[in-house]
Image 1: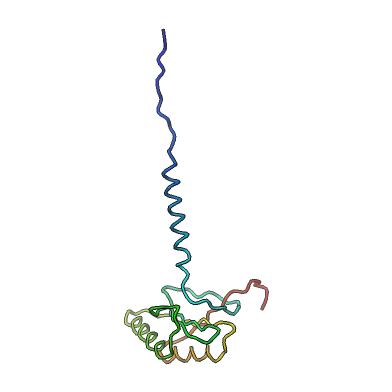
Image 2 (image 1 turned 60 degrees about the vertical axis):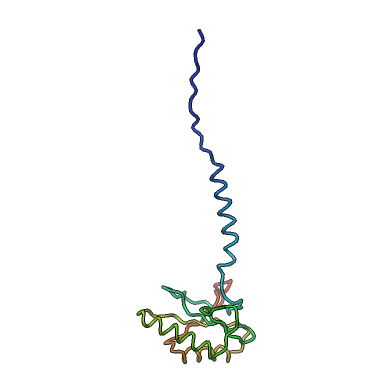
Length: 147
């Protein structure tokens, strides 16, 4: 008498679809990651300072080594902006924030090779636009023991 063998179901998980999904996600992240960094390439001075807590995106005026101004909220943030347009756009954004009852942070990123007067001129323009206070953006030094 021959004994019948029962076929048991296999308890294996087919992981091929999961690998396909992971590869698609990897490609998507590789393509979108460079697009997430926004702004103008500025060589920031190094300084040790506490980070400022942010509840919404601040207004950032960048001053490159040639003394050109850039505004992160402009239609094209990588295009230089003149002083009049800078004052008008920042003023409009500050008024909009005040109407919403929120305080808007205003920051200046100055290249370490730019003339100090250009950074001060940017701060004066922001003051003319109605900014109650202006912060300076720096970069953490590589060695935190340096002062």
